[in-house]
Amino acid sequence: MINYTITQAAELLHKKQISAVELTKEYLQNIANTENRVHAFTQLNEKQALDSAQHADQKLHNGSANKLTGIPIAIKDIMNTVDWRTTCSSKMLENYQSVYDATCISKLKERGMVIVGKTNMDEFAMGSSTETSAFFKTFNPWNLEYVPGGSSGGSAACIAANQAICSLGTDTGGSIRQPASFCSVTGFKPTYGRVSRYGVVAFASSLDQVGTFTKDAHDAAILLEALCGADSKDSTSAKQAVPAFSQDLRDGVRGLRIGVPKEYFAQGINPQVESLVRKAVQELQNHGAIVKEISLPNTKYALAVYYIIAPSEASANLARFDGVKYGLRADGNDMWQVIEKTRGQGFGDEVLRRIMIGTYALSAGYYDAWYLKAQKVRTLIKAEFTDAFKEVDIICAPTAPVLPFKSGEKIDDPLAMYLADICTIPINIAGLPGMSIPCGFANGLPVGLQIIGRPFDEQTILNTAHTYQKLTSFHKEQPKL
Ligand code: GLN
Image 1 (cartoon, rainbow, N blue to C red):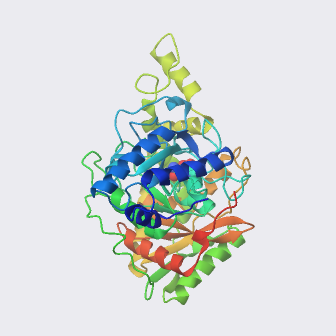
Image 2: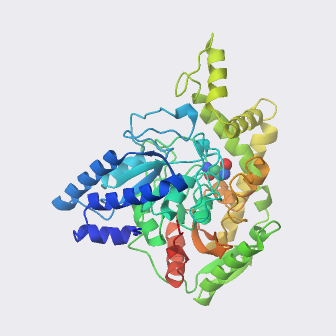
Image 3: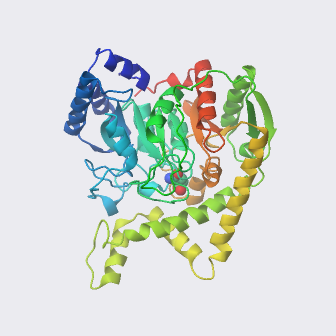
């Protein structure tokens, strides 16, 4: 099975040793060989992929190509694409076809990337296992009885299974980093506002962020360069210059101050996860990093804060799926009945649960007690990180406190599922950039190291990850599918 990084494939394409059409065909073949077991895609369209590849070949011939031209990419089915449906893995949007491309999609198209398919996800990005998809479950390529993580489980699994070279996901509370950890791939969530959210279906607008799945940190740097940047169509996108991440990539951590927060190794952490993550930090220390234990005591409030703020924002955002403005429409005698029936039929249990929690938290009399209080604690959590970053340059922690779990194991226990994100959620609350990279295996299941940085300092995270990946080869291991 072919298995390229962006860098390797780009070299072959530019030296004309392979054409974009040939490369795309290879990946479509990989998909054909594995998809009946992995189930990473909600939509595949060979003809469309090959048409884009042909277009990429023209670019490669007429000299207008760049590093991303002709590279096969998969897209989480939450980003608007004119050429594909955008379902959010929900019955509500099963047949929804957007009339415009999300900004992140336009940017990839401009560079001549080849979209091979849209990937499966937890419905409306609510979940940690890709089991709440209304269509089917995605499985972990490392062990098909296990979940790939979520909500961007399809985007993570397809990279582990070599069904594409890179993919896009979104991360509201961990949905890029946690599945990257579970599938042993490199996942990057940039600083809030770094990548435009225009055309990305909103879950929790103050937390949502687009990011990448790749084979390594170097590829993440290349893809992020293309994605990041201010967008006049998204007022929350940051007016910050985008560094040349891949050109500025440095190998070496001498003198880098790494903070290791003790609360991230607290009760409930799997001892095998703890030992692999500590070993990874040790590796960086052996190569000159200065490691120090830090404390982030407000970590204990992060989950509670998230499960007030995210559902509140979701309840407002999902109000548009009423059968009138968007999506599925059930029949009814009047408007209220249409809305009631539409939502009853179109949303799965987890989505309904979030809408109910959010509506409750925002209702008159409860707003101050719940939502406002959560916002205040959010400010404290953010301040705590700001203080920590006065003493350290980077924070290292586990991505998830547990190993990938079995399919079906937690789906009936929402609280157990929510706990899978305890190490990733605080980073969204504070709007910081975070990354997960493979750091080993326990019982044959992947473990991820999370690297967290200062706002808009993606470069230091990438440099740290790049250094680690030069020293280790976990990111090169392949599942036997
Ligand atoms: N698992 C978390 C949730 O269910 C995070 C999801 C996400 O990042 N989109 O809300």
